[in-house]
Image 1 (tube, rainbow over the protein chains, first blue to last red):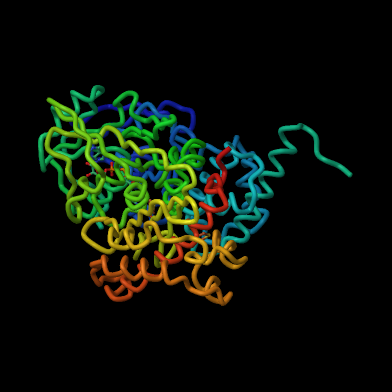
Image 2 (cartoon, rainbow over the protein chains, first blue to last red):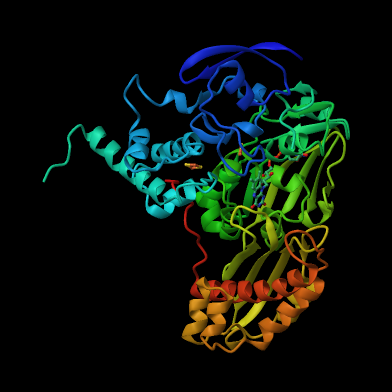
Length: 166
Length: 328
Ligand SMILES: Cc1cc2nc3c(=O)[nH]c(=O)nc-3n(C[C@H](O)[C@H](O)[C@H](O)COP(=O)(O)OP(=O)(O)OC[C@H]3O[C@@H](n4cnc5c(N)ncnc54)[C@H](O)[C@@H]3O)c2cc1C
Ligand code: FES
Ligand code: FES
């Protein structure tokens, strides 16, 4: 098997690309699908900037052969907002000042999303553990943890449909 | 570090037999999670002509426990193992060791078996499995064999896996009643691999150590058991030996050395002697992470602390570890 036309499910849509087995998922996402929200930094698994969700689980696209992602559901940062409406995590990262240069943000938000999908009400410690594989050079993390907590609270209010009022 | 991989042939067999037929030697590599393999290919340390993905092999991602023991398949991820209730309750040492790996992504993608098959003495999973007396099941085209984990690690990067062979399962006996265990690791940062890691398990009965296992990582070409140290402690009285007769000792269940020593808790002669013997068993190298002599000294400190913690856990009858963050 060398070159093939492969169908990927990216952000809910079917996308086709011509790939070879040695191509990395991050390159297919960025170069063929122009989804440049997924960042490349270390290439060694250390930083988490390249994190995408594969079948809902945070995965390092710099260490994944694209060919092994065929048939899995891939979520990148571009798939989070609904039209002009930001995902609660994106909004809270903006509101809490959890974004400085922004390079870590896509991976950080996707790791946080996977956490909140499994555990809608995480403790600070659980948030820290969930984000341990994502490095940020700028913020010092505190604002990021605050943003995840704020998003968790916002999503809870959302899902009950009513805002908690005193 | 290279941005792209060099081309290779790729296969994704759907039966173990199919995979075994394809894995024919040095130029072919099995791919489980790919965390290590893809990284080494980028570093050009490994340049396979053929990569055989195991990801489509059915029924290999299990983690199963019964009265006798724990078994997990070649595709069980580190995350699955760490989050498994059965593992946390029955084999907390394994959960604690995996819990020391920081990155969730690495644990989601990486398999427990892949971690072992890398053959690095710095594995955090290996010492826990050494201390627990795990066995490795290998499946070949013609036969199946099961070997103790000590015989699986041969040298840095070298394991007992032969051509046309795969590790299909790891089997871990259930720790005896009344046992306690502890894993401890020293690393540059919580993301880095270990400078030294130790896993110990003790079982206590009638005020004495009935059994002791002490495993060391990162201090020799393979993980190893500190057998001399183990036999020094076997049958030795527990009470004072572990400093558990006093409140400071009881608190040792969750404490590390500086705090332990700061309480003025007498360092027990038994644990100290065992820790020194363990340091003697270590034959570390000097590298960017530490000098050999520092590693040896840290083996002594970590073994002593781990033994105190394991003993306190055995006596307290609690050895469960907390669920990893975010796992419900
Ligand atoms: C950023 C980072 C941090 C890390 N931190 C730690 C840490 O703190 N502690 C720690 O212990 N590890 C750590 N690791 C290592 C990581 O745990 C391993 O690389 C991973 O578990 C390997 O599993 P895998 O399934 O991805 O293996 P792969 O990369 O797929 O395979 C690894 C090797 O094993 C062979 N192989 C795989 N499965 C089999 C099989 N069934 N039979 C025969 N051969 C097989 C492959 O051919 C390959 O040579 C870290 C890695 C990274 C990138
Ligand atoms: S770019 Fe993938 S982990 Fe850093
Ligand atoms: S905001 Fe710059 S790396 Fe995190």
